Image (cartoon, rainbow, N blue to C red):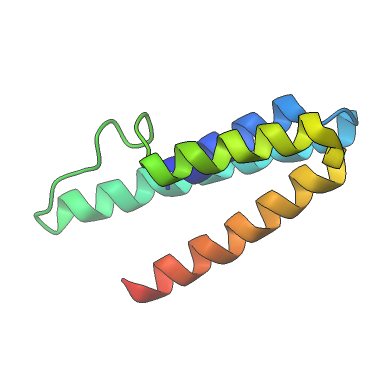
Length: 99
């Protein structure tokens, strides 16, 4: 979930339309909230929490965010950021379903 939180934070910084900025900030907040809830559940079941809930992320997530930033610079603009985040939502649903 860390990657998802960071993706939406970066998306808010990459888009130009204020309505998209606000949307992505709300999505970041929601992802952070859900990551915290999942960590609480993991701890309640005897597992260990992810490092600080969402301050870390995977190497793949880091590379993906760099690719998103580059695509914005190259010219995909707001629609490119939206597409990246739509893909992320699908990935999160798939990963969650596996657990």
